[in-house]
Length: 175
Ligand SMILES: [Zn+2]
Image (cartoon, rainbow, N blue to C red; front, side, top):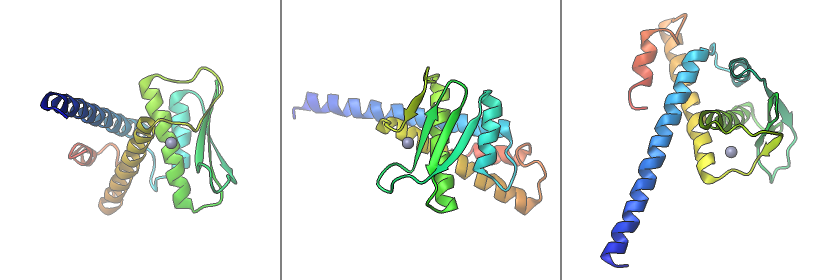
């Protein structure tokens, strides 16, 4: 590869990385903003989070456990005109189910943010790597913030952990 071509390739890669970092930062900020708005109760529950999201979005987010084939996806999101349905593997642990559901919530939140709500029934199981990354960024942000705020609330006996100034100091350092 010549010097010029190498520099161009490097530039493309750098732009791509910077682009996805910005995208991640935007998704993380949006997820934290959503949590603060919803103020989910502790102990944190993904079921409650789905109910709150449904109320906020004006259309329910339903959860449906299903005995999915072991070699297929663990979860899927079905978006319809009036509701979104998250189907998740019935044959696994509660902790794994919570992760699957959060991942699908991640898809929902990231396409809400992008304004990409599908017009009609759509079964969203085929995602691009970028969409998968978005979903994981949202899911991991929600999990991390909920765990951190929950722990602090318990340790310091906070009654309204999402409203305290403590929350600000947690979520704005480091991302
Ligand atoms: Zn996914």
